[in-house]
Length: 238
Length: 384
Ligand code: SF4
Ligand code: SF4
Image (cartoon, rainbow over all chains, first blue to last red; front, side):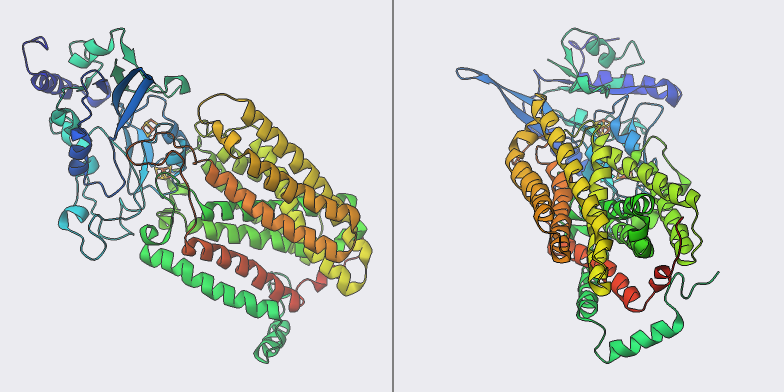
């Protein structure tokens, strides 16, 4: 296994991904590590995610928060990308009255767009603000909608088109899903491939050889709002 | 089963009233609520035709707004009517009995009006059958739907019993216990959300029960005061005055406790209790609770009872909106150009949903009253 120093980090993650895909799904555990020292706050992941999932206005699966730390004159700045944490004890799935959102055996929390009644209880329950309501807005207005705004984004491997407010995903809750439609084809999540600072590491934490497993077992790992007991599967390296 | 004269007015009562209605003698309130129903109906229609994106001001940051708070308000009013029915039957049977069918009927139509408001908020109301196909027993909302259905069913049965003069103590207890569970589950739907400091509280289910009792009783009190005026029997409204005072005092204590508990926490998000302190104390406690209490202390007329009850209904309606919406004021994750505090003001369409629900309740009740649907219960002799 080549070390991160002498091989491109994307090649390492791709090799990790291929290894993981050879195992049965229930033996994989997808997770993400974000190295806050490497994140330069360029928002490339945010925009790449928007184009990958064709998200409408005001819906960002992966915003990047700019945080000011300390007090003058000892101040600093930190960038905190926030995908869905794919929590191991998610509060969103617990409250969904119709089991439209649930945790798969590989750790990804998904939303079944055809089952979701749009009650938004999961938005209220998620402590990370990781969920959004698709109320049917378009960037280009209702009467001049461009193909890319209504087209099927392939989320969850399904062909949902935003053609009217009666059709999912309009009316549903939406959120980051670790690009299931890509990883199941052997492609990395869009955010990790776009990250300019190579700060986003994705992989299977059940694989002891995977880069992510090595990184999250160090002492500089933080989990966001861990005290809430949601057991987030996104690890921040500080 | 007999439908005319029990569930709905008799055929001759309906045709008699329709004639009066056509001649313009239907009653001002009926015409007003009919206009409200039509205008509100246009608003509801627009929400379904145009979609939420163009009609509703809720968003990912404020996922629940006026329609949900209206649902909560009506649901609690409905529960309150049932508690009033139970307490009236148990403790004031002679004064209360003649009003029983009206009270249960109000409980029924407010429960349905609340559901209408809720339905207009859901992104995919047409998938409600999913509650049956893929239920989630860990969700308070699922249990809420189960108990809400049971509640409406028991209300219908109790209403039919009263109308057919077949009173049963078992049914009276059932029509008390099931709503208690129902409105506790509604309280826990909010109170169990650990991530929302403004909601998260074990007090909330109890708070919901008592505010339900207060608002339901206030609605019944208006009806009782009207009946007292009509029949000249002032004693009939006394139980309602007493119950309203008890309701106001209990909600005062619970509101106080909720605010104190919120203020004493130093965890992130709990600053909402400090920021809403003034409005909660001045409007939520003094204006909404102490004010009506004082009116009832010093004036014991039917006009005072009607005035204080209307005040209670309006202020509790606003209190429900405050409870639902203020929960989102402090964002859980603030990013980009999001303001530090999220504000929400309902759209005209959302307001029209309220007009629709209110008008539907007013129209159905007044028309049934004018047609004499509840007269049958007034002839009841003997207690349970
Ligand atoms: S971050 Fe929020 S939406 Fe994602 S799994 Fe956790 S609770 Fe659910
Ligand atoms: S919005 Fe959809 S996914 Fe979220 S709780 Fe409601 S039904 Fe479940």
